[in-house]
Length: 143
Image (tube, rainbow, N blue to C red):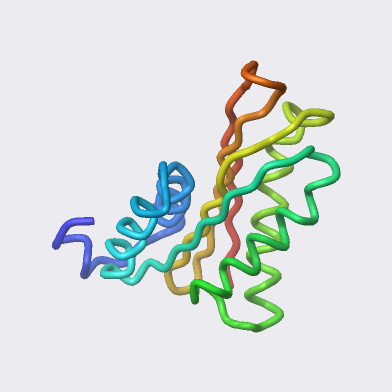
């Protein structure tokens, strides 16, 4: 984000972009640096790694997204905000489902929030061994 961005309002497209960017970070250091830059503009973010078999992992992925969002201060401990993250995560997972059924997934979940916009991006490698496909799923909710 540059100085001009700090004073302008952000919309759903901007917050979706922030969620994707945080999901694409390579390591925790890069993730924390990006979180700090976004926070200067009022965009709060969280990220969490995940790996496992897709079908048996859906609920665990949704739980991790909600827990990491609360831990990083992206959402509060309210039913509506937890539901927004859970719903956006479920939407993102449903976009990945056609490629992932019956296979292993691994990658990162990125969550971003600005005022009432919440976006969840899921970047996963899908497949077996080194024969992976990559996919991004994206969900958005308003709190």
